Amino acid sequence: MKDLFGFIDDLYDKADVSDNALSDILTDSYVLKESDQRSLSFSDVDTYLFKSADKKRREVYDTDVYARGLIEISNRCKNNCLYCGIRRGSPVYRYSLSQDEIMDCVRSGHEMGFRTFVLQGGENPGSDRMITELIRRIKSEFPDSAVTLSLGEKTKKIYEEFKQAGADRYLLRHETADKMHYEKLHPDEMSYDNRINCLWTLKELGYQVGAGFMVGSPYQTTGNLISDLRFLKELSPDMVGIGPFIPQHDTPFSGEKAGSLLTTLRCLALIRLMLPHALIPATTALWTIHPKGRDAGLKAGANVIMPNLTPSYARELYNLYDNKKNVKDEAGIRLAGISAKISESGYRLSMDRGDVIRK
Ligand code: SAM
Image (cartoon, rainbow, N blue to C red):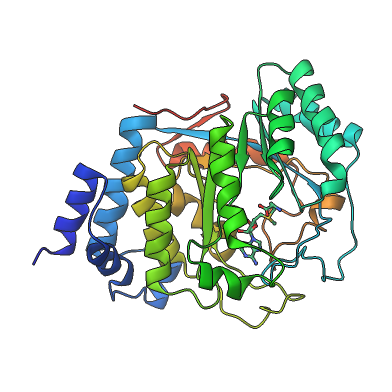
């Protein structure tokens, strides 16, 4: 029987390994002691896994870490996902940024150097026409910039309209690749099949597509995580967003445990090794559960960061989970600090569009 180091070498060489090997890596019993938690010292196997993932990302993307300007355009949502702080049933005050407010965020982000803008929000079919116009405005004022949408499930016709207006990329986390697990995280009115079909439709329409999932969501098993990795391998998305589940006080999952940093880092590294071309953010959620989470994510294979350009009044209302980082700071001030930290870790902050590189 091969040891874990051998499995990691196989993954590095062949971008694949058996389900049993994935399971052994994900469940390796080494647990971070409390002192290790703070300093983030990992076992020899995890250190080897993260180093291998980092080596792979350097083969494709060198040391570049791409910056995307995130704009949380609205917290209005028709869905009632059991984990999410902006679910329909949440008592949060609802806002939608106007087109002009969003254009102001894009303009100031462009001045700071951003060349990708991610428009994210709750699922709100009433705003589709406004979004189409907005995409046109952004692309005509800033033709050098990419527009990424993260606005949930739409019809093929709407995805087509957004694409024709100039949208380049679409992020739609599949959340879990197991239908029964999906049904435990979502109300009956939501459909696993529809979410998965949306991802294939987006691919067919020529978007650069992002999928992804939460690590440690309620009821998740190691088998579910393996299904997630298998689904990603099959879909071969250009971007993969994963982060730990974090409970939010107004949701039915308020009393659940947050996902673990170590398992999230292991998943990140496995994704880098299985999909070497992927653009993978070191997410805010990772940073929220550990002060060194973002840095650890970059060292385990992530190569994207998403500083927040949303006006601070709105950011506070886009409360997907508790204690979300970055709710108050100004993006410009943070960018200088982030750039310095990234250099200290041995990477280079890139403000380029940063499209996917498939070799
Ligand atoms: N409405 C769009 C959609 O459905 O894709 C985009 C916005 S949605 C709020 C963005 C992502 O936030 C979700 O895909 C989910 O994975 C993540 N998220 C929501 N609640 C979370 C929580 N409690 N902990 C961690 N991530 C969460």
